Length: 90
Image 1 (cartoon, rainbow, N blue to C red):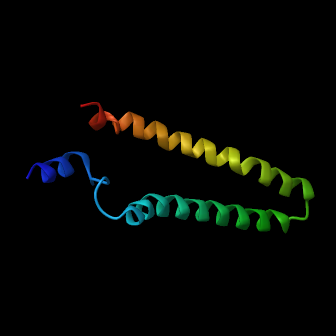
Image 2 (cartoon, helix red, strand yellow):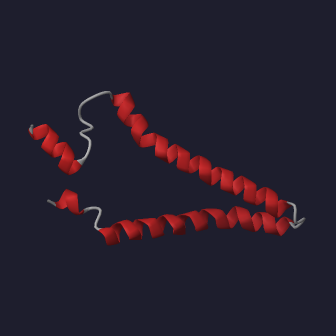
């Protein structure tokens, strides 16, 4: 009964069960995010490459990591404003 109450309050208890299953549940979202980022970068580089300017392709290669870091920072700021860490403080 207490275990169900804790899972309801804090989420899934990852200290019990299959370790590989828990690792997959952590790594799959990151892997999918990385694949989307690589796909975006590849399509953008191909599209800019068809413009025929070498400097433009270089600019895409330099600016994409900056763009994704800023996007990540924006997501972190939204999570902080929602108070996502409040449950862990209790």
